[in-house]
Image (tube, rainbow, N blue to C red; front, side, top):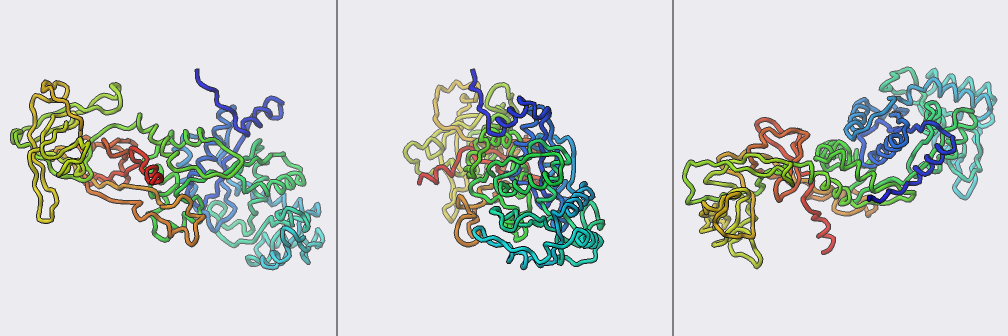
Length: 551
């Protein structure tokens, strides 16, 4: 019997709304601004909005908040759609705030006619000076009491392009002494002579977020407009505009933004990392963007499970990155095929194995019999990990050392007889003898060895570039540290090694997931070609950072 999961506060609200008959169909929306790539904070919002309507039989819209033509690009629109689909969600309607520019303009005219909006000639600096402080009331703009007819005329001239950027704005007329600073005659429209990615040069005035957001929700009849906590002060203006415009009463609800340790979740800071060359683009596998995590090898299920099982809250919180990695390992443990790869190779020569002889062994593909097996070739010379050999065996050392025996995974038991070193003292070759009667699956040797190591046949090995990714920052919360957040970048966040992998990986696909035995989980990178395999380490088998924290 499984324990029933308790409802979060939004589910409680929705269930009550359905029970009371307030709504028959739940409608949410995911409203990204197309000015960058989505990150894990957005993933939380996506899973929440789409998850709620999936659970309660409603639907979700994808609406691009494209009201700032200077920063928005079609590239971002396309990437956002791809990310949402990759996570496993589908929207009912693909919409844009720019779809509503004509309607929003009419809404602004309505407010002017009701004496609730005016055109202000003040500069942004002058508006800021008159705004007041949280403890002191603001002062009225000298243009606040213009007549309705004068405001209508000026607003039309703004639309017609007669004024330069920054010279005029449209402001709501509310209360310059309001305790909520956002209610002190907020800006509704500003002038921007810029080409828009969808409307071209039709408009040179654009609505501010607060004027576009709630009205777009209302036009789409969104029942539950879900935002993060920084929009709590905006809710009063959201409700005021809907009330004064007398339109469909959508309602805003807020939840806590999810932050991850050892990274940053600010689009502005992520853009800095990209533009200043600290990472190789928005989809760099060290980035917390959905594109970066997909390229690194994260699975949609691991991100959905993380978002669902961590839940939502009403207070800001930082979740340790290792929690996300836990859900990733949980998924990959079942999904990833087991293969052998040697990342720091040294040659092992079986001296009593016949020259030119090749055998084939069956090795398990996964953690259980249902995963099946694959054929792995074996020969006289093998690559093994350098760390699997020690010149002088330490206490409780169960791998190779002079005189010690180990089992080669799925093959034979070997005993180390000698080794070679170069002039610098580096091990260049390890010489072993094998026990023919110890063949895996038909072992009649009677020997029990404690150590098993992986290997790749030199004759059959494929060379590969392996990128070992780690956390991008070396401190838990780089944004809260003194100085520039970029000062805390982890210098070891990417290491590139030349490795040897078993020949089955010749046919690796970009959606395949692999566990390199004893080394971690890996995936094929998009840089990979037929002549050069490139693999990314998605995550280690165990949380190495937990050990560091205990030191």
